[in-house]
Length: 106
Image (cartoon, rainbow, N blue to C red; front, side, top):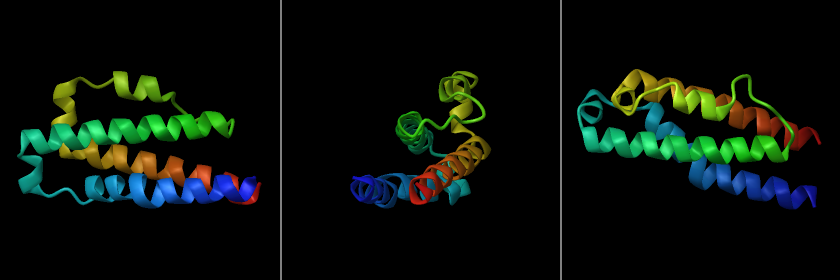
């Protein structure tokens, strides 16, 4: 059972979460100026955040700040900020690594 969870986590991280985080981390000035692209990327990051939060809850891990609080403290206008996108990407990457470490140690 632990192997199945590890494999599904690895697949989710490899094919869904990591590509979104890398794209957000490597955002260019040109993309930052595209409002539609930024809104789409912000929505994708918030979806990734929900998945990571669900994994944390399943693993009974808690992040330092609840995900709902992190998302609600920003207005939608702030999501177009490239710095916010990069910071959110780093935060989610760290949380994902913590979950992966927990599953491999278990």
